[in-house]
Length: 410
Image (tube, rainbow, N blue to C red):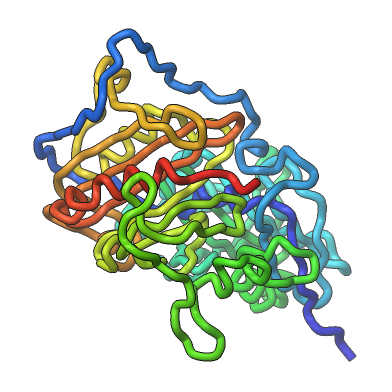
């Protein structure tokens, strides 16, 4: 009698996929760029944070043997076992009965050359002709971490990565999910007969990959949160949002109740803002004024998260605008956040993103973007608000107050 699949939790912080599941793409077009300068300090020379020089693995949250924050979990198929992670294998598996099968998750910071490059790199390992962009777009898709990822199958003589002798009658099945800052792949490779036999187990394993609770016993991380309860704010007895919003007014122009997230951050909620369901790689997401075409969220990356210039220019690119010049970057306004000077960016134009739902659902012609980038030791915190331009302008002060209110739980 076969034992049931085993539930496993892998200790890697949620920020590991912050690089992966931002999934925002730059749009084309060159509308006029505008910035609102809240203050300019003539004598201040802001330092563009270079960040601590970390290895890619450290940037992905794996430098600490006991990383903080939520974990990733998966359902390990019967007969499979987990191996220690190693370079380019952030989660690593094989079979108990046959180590010829290799399955592993890889997070490539910077995108690893892009989807087409990596699809054709895999094909090149099997001496297959490259695919053009149109053919790649027609590849089937399956869910990975809740997102549509390319799903690839190929076989033949496998040359591997080391340039050694090829292995006859091998097969590869893999997923590929792209974002501006990273590419995540999950693949299984080995003798074709072995891969065919384990195909469904591999797909089930891929489908089961998810954020863990951060608790080795699987308890809800919000269970002891006096302000949280269900992460979506549902009352288990009535389906209603149990988080109070509070009366108008309050410190920094904010109205609301201090909330504590499982990530260890706290914030004040502006009046009328509604909390959206938790999403992968975001500390929290809100719909300002309940408008689902708008969203404001907090995210966190390890190291410097790519640095100030890269993130500012990525945000501008989402608005169809070109990169900011270095001298103008230094003159962007600063606001206090988490005890540091955060850099404020404000832009208006046509917003485009690959994410589904509301303002992130493709294109918003008359849009606004507000963002704050704040660099702490070994990590970067970002607050970003996108939505219809008139709403963004109307909620600008609430956004600033929200950003200033963010703090680490004591």
